Image (cartoon, rainbow, N blue to C red; front, top):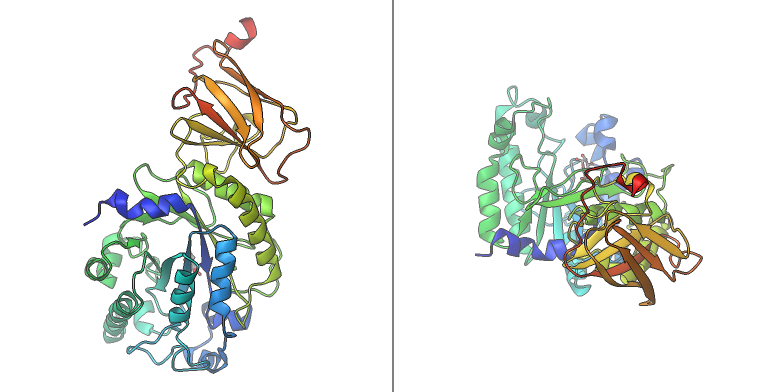
Length: 423
Ligand code: GLC
């Protein structure tokens, strides 16, 4: 049996994964909540299953793009809230194996991910909008029981039929009436029994916190959060608007590549991961707005991955609140042992100064090119000066300086805030 740390080792090394939201909702082009938000009855939604026909090789394309973007793992919605399974199931006829294209998309995806050397993650929604027993368990108790049976059976299929699964991302575990009582939710889904079964079939798996139980991973949405020390954390975010995980034809607010890289950096500085979503088009292709940005992230990450993979928290200024870069400095820090990485977004040109540096820097270089820089240090003032930087930012998104310190870089205490004036 591996320890918690051993099981999460690959996850911390990775720091970056790609989420794929794909299902019947993709055909409607209005996001993955369309069935519910437009109250489309299951009988009127059913026809979409016969139209579902992603082009051959779609899953392989998602995986190739994920790899080129620098992701080390990928997570596919095997069944979202609409109830359509992208896998062959004995417990449902509403699947891609029995309707439309008659293909097991999960099988294609799992094979493609392995071919690219990506760890395999599966998303599975506990709730299924086709079950009245989910919305009103008191009125439809038998239907509620059959929903939970079906969920347990499908999770068993996913954990049995596709080889090693590295990550299980539950979703939709909340109660329809939004009853916040966790114990009620856990009992509703029989989550303890469910997760014990998962672990007996996949002993090394990482499970997220959305079945009601905390399990291994926190999964904040649309916000970057630092990990609770000792726990896995993965911020799940969209490239476009926050309600558009599934393909949305008109998606007005695309984040810039620089913003996406900042989110990745902010996650890494809090020892957390960044799971960035794509919502492929009805035929499975990845839209240009997403593709182009992912290629930018990949180019940056390939050149700077030492600052991101297996990153540790660094005390130096710029790191205290993920998502916020403090005190008008140039950018946050990450660290690996005694090596600090200064991730500069607001490039100062020629010379960069860091304050409250309590550990002596020994040498510095531009991470992407290896160009050596001159590092000066005034120990009393806690000031580190890096000279010899190019006038223009070497990287238009984020230029990274690697600094070797004598010891683990520490923040210098500043008990008297006026000290620097009178010194
Ligand atoms: C939410 C949404 C959903 C999306 C998911 C991603 O819970 O219901 O549509 O799949 O988060 O994490």
